[in-house]
Image 1: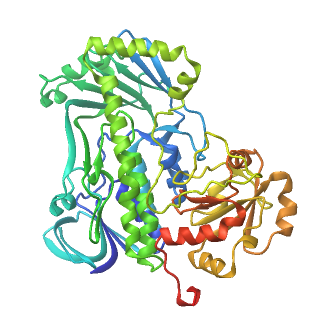
Image 2: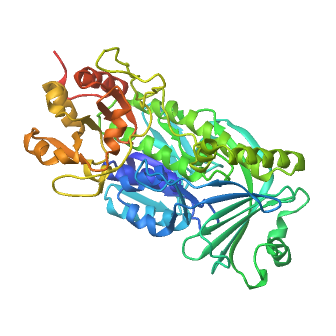
Image 3: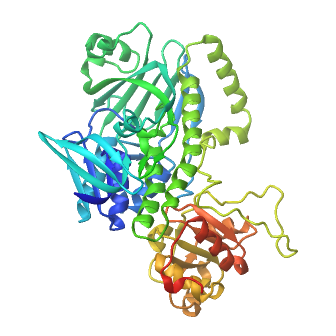
Length: 547
């Protein structure tokens, strides 16, 4: 058969990508070697960026029941002294920054979400066994039961995990390390502790973590020592011994899963080979301590989804897909490095290094700003794309536009998502009001008055939304006096006004993945759009091309 996109692997990356492509009406086939989704212990943390993606694909209301919002983390040393707390409470992107969750249940939501789309064909129990490609398409030989067939697609996306058939078949190196320390994960039902937070134990004798998960599930993860064989995971006596200091009576636990993990920190040397791309764990894996493996997979899907749809639908040149690796690889590497660093912090067995860590924690605790930085998870690398579909900001040198000495452009970062209002609705998240396509946000100005006819037609062909942002007190007046085709949005909390107040710009071009492609003064919007269109390798119907 023939299709536009073939996705190999129904993990979080493949499932999210298929939902994104389904919403764009792209013909998509998703194959998975297993007969059903994996149900053993996996990721336990979903962040605000990932929840915003779930919102974008229309599934966040079904995901939230499987989460623990605003989950605090307490890091303790071997003497059970709390040496650090992580408790971010901000809502920059509309959702809690840290959330516990049950991955198999959320993955199931993503799978069931695909039933909404006639253009998406899901085939479980179908394994990729061979791959051939030209410059224009790829053909994958698949096996389902005893039946072998072929699927030809314009693009093939390998999302089948760390042992990726696609990456191996292409001979792409998986650079990095396999860490000596293994982890034993134990999930129990009927949570015997019940407290809602997570604890990371930096005990040099044996590092551990324990987390409260939804639906009465409790997870423990223990560092396995070098002389402990993996067969011990089946020994109740060994498991009970590990848990003896954690619960009153380990023998009364309702253990539902136990599994040994080997921690990897690896990054594919490249993410693309002709019409074939890698995403998720097929492209990168990292230790679980920072809780960013699953979330990095979702970021990959969000970045790649809109670009694939634009190319397949003829809105952009194939070269747009090269920007996927340009943008994602550096950020993923930062996440891998963070995960390795946190793993070393929590799981090291050196009493000397542990003592140095504890001493540093005392210093941090006495410095309010640094303590707030750690608690707010300020160490987490946020996406900031300096290459790809971004236009470097030109800071104005005008007497009417003062610029702070420490100003840093927001280009390449995520646009915030506060709660806003319109004349028809109050207290809504910004993306629910404006959608998740291309958006032009302008503070205190009607965007149509700033863009020429040709670029307005181009924006219309993209399905872009023009958004006039105003203080909530001006909402009614602005709605009555703004031109057709422009959405007026009120800012009741002042969050958007404060965001623009810190910038020497009043207009922002936002991509479908919520990343700021450009920011400029109102009078420069038209020329800035031209630069964005070029960076995005966009194509236009002939009637929009200047003669």
